[in-house]
Length: 352
Image (cartoon, rainbow, N blue to C red; front, top):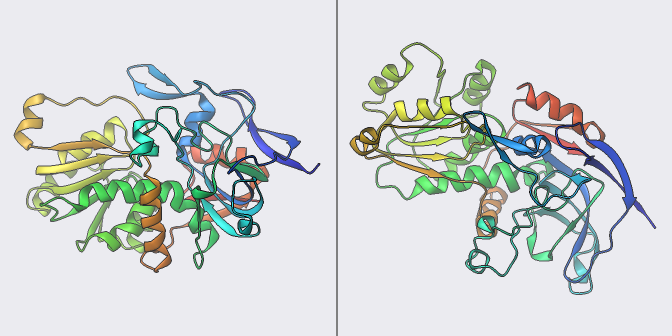
């Protein structure tokens, strides 16, 4: 039997190891995909650590229900190699991107199309084995999306950083007040947000990041203004320049400092969507919440329907590709370390 090679999590808070097992056989509506690309995401680091920082020295356990060895990786694209008896045979040989935010299929959220909210989820690379391998088993053919004529790297990133950025921006699109927009944090998801925003909003897009190289990259990729949140009196300057602050803010960092900055530059009646997972705690005087009439919404990943909307936008040429760097799958651990050290701009795409 053919074998598959995986970059496996064999122990929490320890480097990935290469493991070799028999390639699984798809059952029912399952599909076996030969992985050509899998993106490296910041959330992979939390899963490897076995926890996420929730501030005040407290940690959120991310090991619940996980069996080791485990295969990380959820931004997956490749070629269908084999299908189960209940999946369409004509899929074999087709190039597909994978929607990884898969629910149990039976709960209230799943029935409502909100599989990404499912408490008994089967998120690929999070709850079930993902794409840091030569092959991966997708629970159902319906989670495969056509991506032609997009480059494969872009198709893979759309399924996490893309759908996260798109979904977060979509939660601002219906607001009656959207005079201006600020994106905070220019990692893989923030850069993707900057690519998608012009397809959804007419306004100029401003960005903020502590890294000068990230700000430069953003200005080259379409941002109109780039701010350094650590600059002295930056909030006062922004409030003055924008005549009252920003109506729409997405915090793609999700740390105590990024949120404090977001609130300091938010206009009255404005909204902040938080989709970053850097961690920590955030507190706000109740009076300020009411006085500013602010809305804060948490957001993580999107639905299968939103993934299809985003893919349609991208295939129509409405979204600019983000900076992506290809590296060999066997070097997954090396690039995890680089990402941890903050030495990655854009997205690392692991290749087989």
